[in-house]
Image (cartoon, rainbow, N blue to C red; front, side):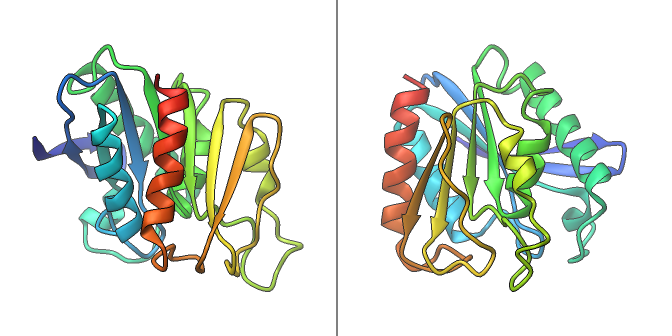
Length: 201
């Protein structure tokens, strides 16, 4: 089943685009990148493979995108809106399901910052932006390092936003391509499929 659910947040309405699996055993909530939307090809590919593993998916459209703006809201507003959507899903469409959170780029950062508060079981990061292109001194790695849950990062091997290191709880899979992860979607899907099988049973 596919449907879109409007969720009121402290910073305007968001939308959760649902792709519900048959007899789901877990739920995966994913956020989009800064300038893109939930139709990003890697998000769609991951949503499709998750459903084959009996994992229901919600692709969350932040309020600034719902309102038609391209520039993202400040981090605090993004985190509050995301939290409101996840709370709604946990009390309704995804009630009783173990929760995996994640997203691509900016969405991955939001998921990392809020994963503990959301009582998630794992985190999935697509193209985590370790630093702005050409600015390695502006590292955002502390957001990723703060996550103590099982984490998968799928990163393009030519991503100008950097390559995060693996860690005891963090698997990093490099695939061909840049920050858009469009070059080898099959490799992206395969990495996520294997990881979901492990973390979601």
